[in-house]
Length: 332
Image 1 (cartoon, one colour):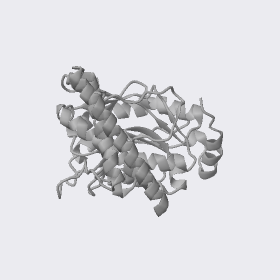
Image 2 (image 1 turned 90 degrees about the horizontal axis):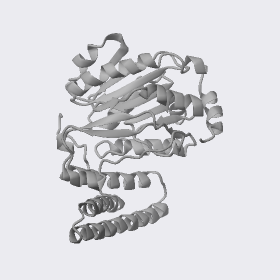
Image 3 (image 1 turned 30 degrees about the vertical axis):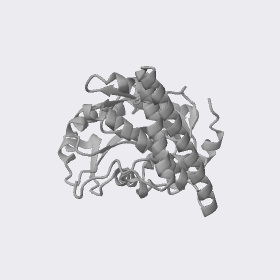
């Protein structure tokens, strides 16, 4: 278990609220997934009711940020009455939606992010809040477990393409996604932190955001009990998709590393280090995939391709190339 001593004084200094009077919002960002939203919102409201006592906060509410230019989620969100607040953010891209969630929560103390295609498991929100209360951390990260709409290709399973990290509760982490994340917004506001628009169509803005957050001295800790399930549709469970995703992850990681430094000399050194790291992964992954083919081992072949794809993304990022996985057609 980590020590939270350095956080407590910071939280107290930036907050005008007593611990027993904190406000909390659960934010779900959505884009043209009405069926998912209809299924998720009742679950979130249940978790908010469950968390309304015993955690030093006022009853949490739900915020829906609709990133569809047509505002297609309005009707679905409005069905749930006062427990759900709907806002329309027509500017395309996940960064605009994330920053809108921050802007709408300007008077809120705690913000919890969850994706619209995820489902929280039992005691999800209370586990996040309890870990925060017990550790005094500036943020809490929970695990995401994938479930599949159709039987998963054994090659994808062998390659570990959907494997995600699991850590003991209380472990300190320095980077996180916003698919299962509690943040103390008093700390976020104290350093005027926003999601970076340069990553809007590429992904990775959440990684950069949390790296800057922990780089400012605030602590993120893991809560292994706060599980959400990611419902993976058939079109995202193909070999082509998972390979492209690993490439994008490598590309975003390299670009995030570069965004965290300043100075031309440092940038040149880092680009060289990233190029070496990426090329090493490409070479090692290719060798493993080749051995998998020769040895008739689907597992080695899949693992090798996964490693090589991420390495290729890192190399591209080192050269300043950006893979725009989330780019939309104009008006979409």
